[in-house]
Length: 351
Ligand SMILES: [Zn+2]
Image (cartoon, rainbow, N blue to C red; front, side, top):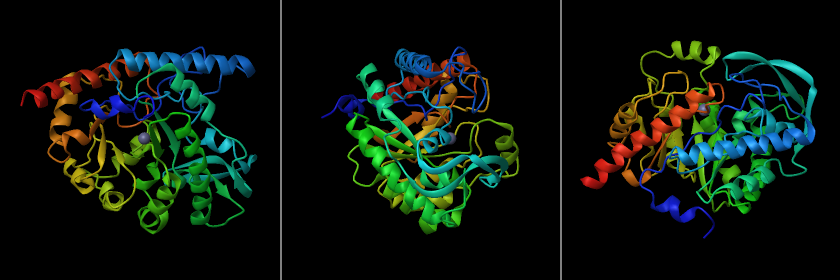
C-alpha cells in the first residue's frame, strides 16, 4: 500500500479539486491564462516549488482530502505537456479553431511525436514529499491535445490521438511509480466532438490509462470562466445534455472516476445515472463566478447528486480549474467545498 491509499478508501465523501489553483503574483501574472512567468531558470524552479507547497498547505488546512499540485509548475494544462515532446514545432504556428469555439495560434506537428524524458514526474515526486494525503495528478487527454495543434505530419486526428495516448501512458506509469494515487485525464473536447468520442475517443483514453494500478479519472467540463466559453455556453440552451453522449461509453470503459460540472450549470443532474457504478467527481463549486458558494449551496447539490450516485462513490469537487480566479476567492471556495461536504457527511452518518 502506497502513501495516501488508506485514507482515500476510508474518508466518506473525500473532497478534491479538478486541478489548477491561482498562482501567487510573484510567480506569474494573476487572473490570466497562459500567464508568462515572472521568474526564470533556477529561480523559476524554486519559485514554482514554493507555490506548490502553498497550494498543498491551503488545500490541507481548508479540508481538501485528495490533494493536487494546483498546477503551479505549469503554464497551461495542455501546452506545457506538449512543449516537452519532440515532433512539435512551437515556432511554426497556425491559426486553428479550438473545440469548435475560438481561434488560436497553435504549434504544428511536423514529425513523429515522442516523449524523450519524463514531463511531470519530478514535480509529482515533489508533491508526494509534501503530504501524506492521497494525491491526484492531471494530464491532458489525447483528444484535447490534438485539438490544440495543427498537424502537418499524421494528417489524421485519430492517428495523432493514438500516438499521444501511448505517450500519456508512459508518463502516467511513471507518475504512478512516483506515488500518485489518482491519475486524471482532462478531456473537455469530449463535450464537443461526439462522433469522435464514440469512434475512437474513449478507446484512446483507455489506451492512455492502460495497465495502471492507480485510480484513473476523466474530467469533462464546459471550460474555464473565460469569455469564449461563456458565450458558447449561452448557445447551448436551457438543458446541457452533452454528457448524454459520452457517459454511456464511459460507464462501459475501464476508467474509474468521471469528473463533471454541476454547480450553476444547466446539466440535468439525472444524467449522472448514466455512469452508475463509476465514482463521480461532482463539480459543486462554480469556477466561472467570483461569488463564493455558501456551505449550503454545496450541500444542496451533493444531496441532489446522491439520488444518482452511491455515497461511497461521490467525490465532491470543483466544476473545473480555478487558475483564472483571484487567489482569495479560490481559497474561499476550497473552504466552502469542505464545509458543505461536512454538512452532508453528518447527515449520512446520522441516518
Ligand atoms: Zn475543466
